[in-house]
Image (cartoon, rainbow, N blue to C red; front, side, top):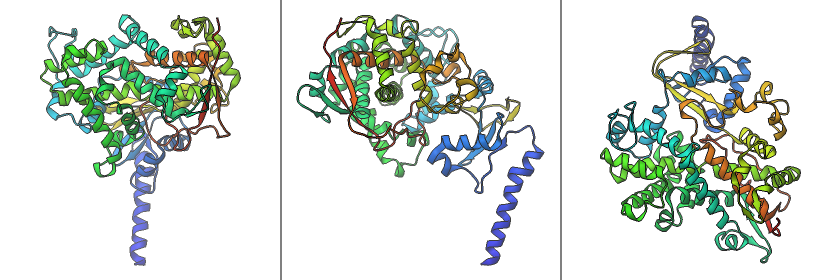
Length: 505
């Protein structure tokens, strides 16, 4: 037994010296690999991937790309802004489609449908213009831009957002719809902030994109989505089915409800749906994609719509509740956009010249609460940051680490200080990546900001809001990966009290 232990230790030591000392010396052009005493960093990656990446960068004490292995996959980690720009420019050798197609397989799309989605289409096909002969998978990104970038199509959605918020942000409606609230008579209402923001914004997003039909099909769909979204990391890591029933059950319910949606005659729902939903349906069906697979495709859009704005508005309000002077500044700056309690000029709020504090609060919230990372599959040996990255491995750009660069964002980097955004052109820094970068930059960023700031401004106009009790500042769940904004740790929600304010002019 002693001999076996000694042999095992010698083997482990020999492996470690070869892997992390000798091999790097023989291959100086390759990124150095973060050492470990086991063959990979899986446990640390799944428990706290952001902490692992921060530890690795600190270990190497350099801005050069480094490598780490997780479950047999090698990730080249890029933590310097100028190197991340190289990643986004290397569209010929680095692919984002691998990640998307992996999600399609995981969530139930047939392999032949995935192949159809990523096969080039004719340049003169009917429907959405295709001058480059792109596949529907690529065209879908362009359709998102057509709907969600500034223009008439975005204005339609913004109007829907404004109308929905106007009708769903009164004490009477809150008493009627928030069954989990703790009313204190009719003069005020107490709400768990994270739960309320989450449910409110999922219902908002669902209404804006799909109209009332989905709510009639399944009134509990927003609750199912929230159950799924808090476990989305199991989908991202492709957990085996026996370990992910709690995630896959609500996911199946969402997909089934979307399937029922598309089985309703088009004439009964198209007027309530966004242009993007109707166009995606037309393009998919023109390729022979059935309702089952169409529901899975649109499921990816459904969670993209709803996963981040609900958490962003929670963090904005949390920082304001804990910083009364900032809350007053937000309320005062947005005041000219209102006539009494009615928002008459939502675009006044979007202009940083009119509302510099609102603009700074928005950016600082994204900086502190964002988690997202960009992942690319290497299709051909590529040099990034002066290091050779081998075909078949993956490049990882952890945006959160970029947002804590003191040379860019100043001191007290872990504190909430909106005034740091008064620094000229800070939003133009290549270290600022709250929505990703390159061709895959989040196209919903304009609607997200409009929705969050419109909601917060209207809420502060109509209500006084205060924290109930002495609960500590909620902690973000930094360990689990998400597609944008972090959730809170379990048990860290807190109650707020809303009291109507008198109408002002």
